[in-house]
Image (tube, rainbow, N blue to C red; front, side, top):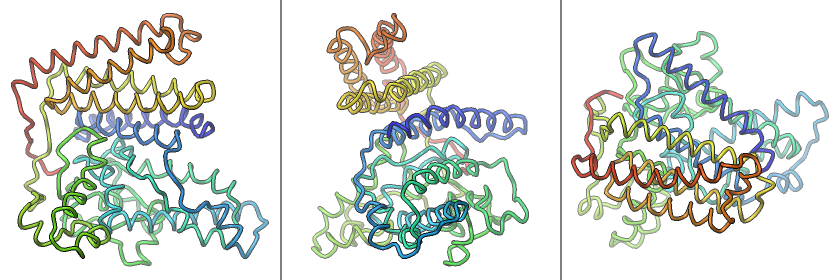
Length: 426
């Protein structure tokens, strides 16, 4: 995990630069591909997923090395072939896990966050789950294990395979000619993110599109059907932590409320969106009936609140990068405590962006935790004083300022408005 944290020190700034370039190019073309609050929400989601991955908060059901030991039949010597098969193996596994995430009720909870944005841009690529506790991904790497691909090779190729899925989350690149025949392109992935009836649950491929063509899930982008982005049951929040557990909470409630004991069990493994008939009748859930009449979620934050949200995002990002830079020095359990604090921070400022009545309470919790950690460490912030002597004082001042701003926004904006929607096709 320490090595992964070091890699992210370079990957995260690169992603930010590309997101900025996309925004500049879109503006030059007269296109609107970003909304401030949506982008802050997307980037916040990326941070929660990154923190979770770096802290290793996932239980792997079966290790890949175990599979190689007991399933491996061949042993490929040629270096380039080992890496090629590893890449193809990861993509094959990615296709099937991605497909399961879309088509099975319980697994959709792990993926809804990625589709929750009603925009389609590079920042929404960073909307990734924190709700996965048990990972079964390695089960789909059996083909790679049969060929005896070493775990060390998978460890090298996996981050490259993951980062290569970033670039095609954009509306700025049209169809790409012959590359469309075998690669996942922006056009293919726009289809995947759309909720039009023609596009729903199509194009699961991560790098190569031929899996979809072989397994019957391919759909080209149609010029007469403009994609509309989002999910059929809109999440209606900017808070990525809430989004991560919305679908799971609905399943729990439905399983509890249904009178049919068979439905209490099968609801988890039925197709995504399925609900017991008795529950659906007594507790209807609103869904988008006409995607072309979609009204995008918007809390209409003031310029002040939106600017403050960007400040909060930036400072939280810097605090996260500080954690990664001092990962080994902070050690366990400090890294877990630090990560938990960052989660509370993200929850707090996105709740404020939602203009939720709970925003002040969330900020009180964050400020209390932050000042408590400073006090517990004798006025230092996880060794920051050794890097920047006044750093801990700046951190303390920021916590106090954040609480003051939360009270101000609560009085001036939250008490006077309720979340609204804006017209638009997505």
